[in-house]
Amino acid sequence: MSDREQRIRAIAHRLWEEEGRPPDQEKRHWDAAERMVDAEERSPSVAPGLQPTSVETRPEAPSAGAKPARKAGGTARSRAAAKKPRGRSGT
Image 1 (tube, rainbow, N blue to C red):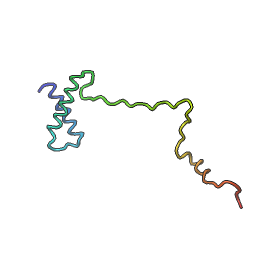
Image 2: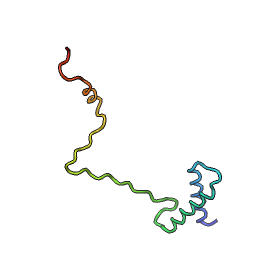
Image 3: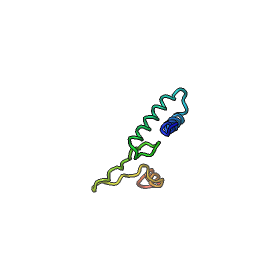
Image 4: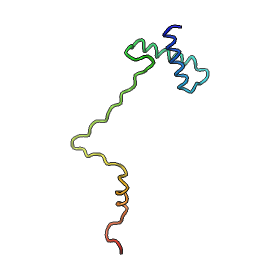
């Protein structure tokens, strides 16, 4: 068995396991693994068996005049204070 075929077999097996070992999916998993190995061979900078992931972007910094966002809910003390009636007490 060639090195390429061993890589395809290993990737196909991993795909099969990741999908919960569904029956009668050997051809689909083999074809997907073969495409992955083909892509690896075309782009040798990617480690075998790994696929590039998307890069998350950070949100832009607020503009100079923007107010900072307020926390939702606040603290227990601030919620309790908000519930107290204002004005004269004890009457």
